[in-house]
Image (cartoon, rainbow, N blue to C red; front, side):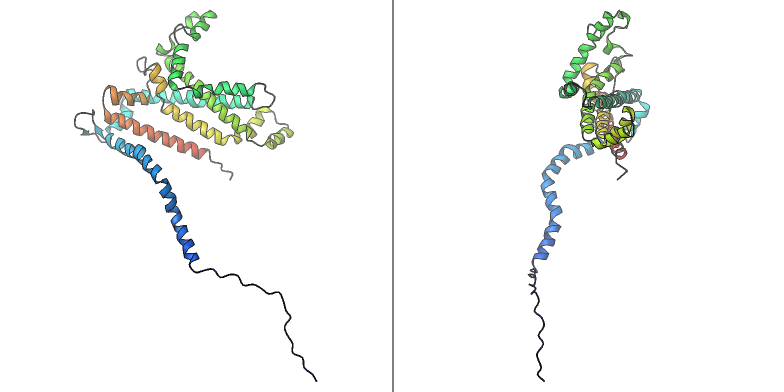
Length: 319
């Protein structure tokens, strides 16, 4: 009986993968370890400048705030007495109260009006909406000095406001608005509303344009009206823009200085004084550098706290 040798069937030949060199893996690991330090090396010049102009002065300001010092004679230890002045100093307490009023005029009112304007002008059937938004944004391109001069002229005894009142026979209401102890603060507040209104409007209008139209179509199919459409779709879709507008306007109200100083210098009396005006007066007019530094530290801390709170509240918890 003849025997045949069985040979395995020839199959597709597999080509072995090229072996990786032993040196490539350590090189890759070394590069990955080096990447964070490489990024810091690129950022080092910017961080150095930031530390020089921000961190170092902040630390110095915090240190100076613990002393009584007029800038000339030797400083004496004060501890935290400069900070307790916010509770005991009537001028500082009044300045804080005025800041709350400015927050209403600089933040709450412009944001409310901006939301209303954005809801109206963002509709396609509004003619001239682009020109309208351009006019509203115009105050943002003006410097604070120009804004102060414009509103000083508007509120002047012979300015447009009093001229309009006299034209309607309301001569008894005409007054020097910025020199009136009762009306100077709300008059400056309205000027701040005018300055912040355009920015809020442009932010909200740009936000409404990024909201998917399918959402509006869905609520309209359900029979929603304009008010329900705004609160159901538009307002939730403007969460990020609201956070930006509220942060910028609130911090502007807390740190307002230029328009107050250029129009009333905190007067008449102390009717429009703000913490920044107090800081300037304590630092330069009647030197009390320690108190001025304490006011600056408190303003910085409050500004940071406000920004963090707004950021936390604006987080999208649905993700």
